Length: 373
Ligand SMILES: [Zn+2]
Ligand SMILES: [Zn+2]
Image (cartoon, rainbow, N blue to C red):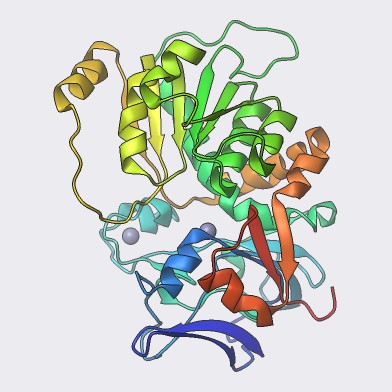
């Protein structure tokens, strides 16, 4: 079967002919992969910045954003049956008895770092035709979401962030005043840094909860991303028009910053826009570059005097996957065209070079593996 793999030793990326996987235990499920998303992480693996093959293998099959269809189930599998659509989770627990997080099925909070991530580190991924996976790592998806469910995995980042934002905001002994027909973000202002897929999906999740939402990115409007932002009732701002230290003056103090740009300078500069009792959520992983100067006194003063929280978040648990599946359905009801426009193109596996090694334009590109669907 076709699979897209990196060979870190020979620094090569290839479309390979891999062995068909088969079910080896009664709790396993065999999936035909339908869509596999391409993201910055995949491109970084293909540039050999990281990515570790499974033990004993000279290559790693990449791909972690996926949608599959169940084709075969082991004798003990109860939650899915052949024909069902599923989105697999990415991270697998570390083996250590003392890792409370992994022992509680919350490997997204793993203490040791010895977890595996399918398609990223230590385990083959989903950029292939068939995959075998344990039932417990699969999330069933309604058939109606066939065309957009590939967005579930990148949306889980925002969902895990939102779950934590609500938990942190519970430290404040009041909520938004009740307004009929409004969700509980309605009295808060959110700033999304970055207008890539993670940023735009995060903006949709914030808008779905009625946050006033500003998406802040480099490119000047109008462009395809600013059109999505406007379609969901958010505001697009370019850093060329509004410098980071002017954000609060232009839009008012920010209650939640959702960072999805991976640019640390921009992130720390825009921290000045944070208001009282606010939360800054980092999701990006910047490459290591030259150190830059940051006014640490100002930052620390604001954190203390304004009761601010800085939160980093990575990966996602089952609760975030389930929330993402519900939200993709909700986005489809509210903004069907904007949601669909996030998928810029579906491509044959043979086009992997342009997608992974080139600089594709657009928002989210998807590789189609299914022969039948
Ligand atoms: Zn990704
Ligand atoms: Zn662990």
